[in-house]
Image 1 (tube, rainbow, N blue to C red):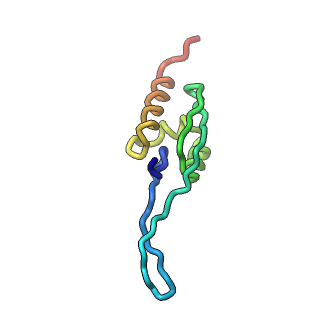
Image 2 (tube, rainbow, N blue to C red):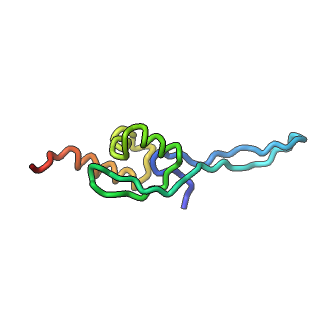
Image 3 (tube, one colour):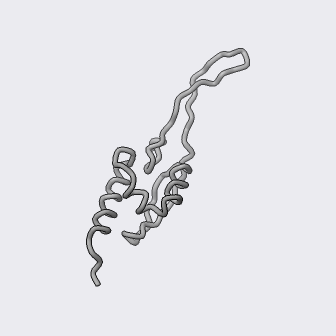
Length: 98
């Protein structure tokens, strides 16, 4: 399982450990990923995603998973998130049966 946020696309970064003697060795900086269950209001279901804490804060700030998916471009989203976005857009575009 790759260490990439499914919503923001945030992945690992590469850098150096630098010792007191200025020796440099390669290292990686991994994102803080959490397995979360987010509720989709449009679909009426909950969705399990692997999201970075930064992405989770962004979703909360925008007002929920549906708003986040509609406002985000497809380039940053994972395949599962793109499918979810398609379903949410389809559900929001069809008028509710009264």
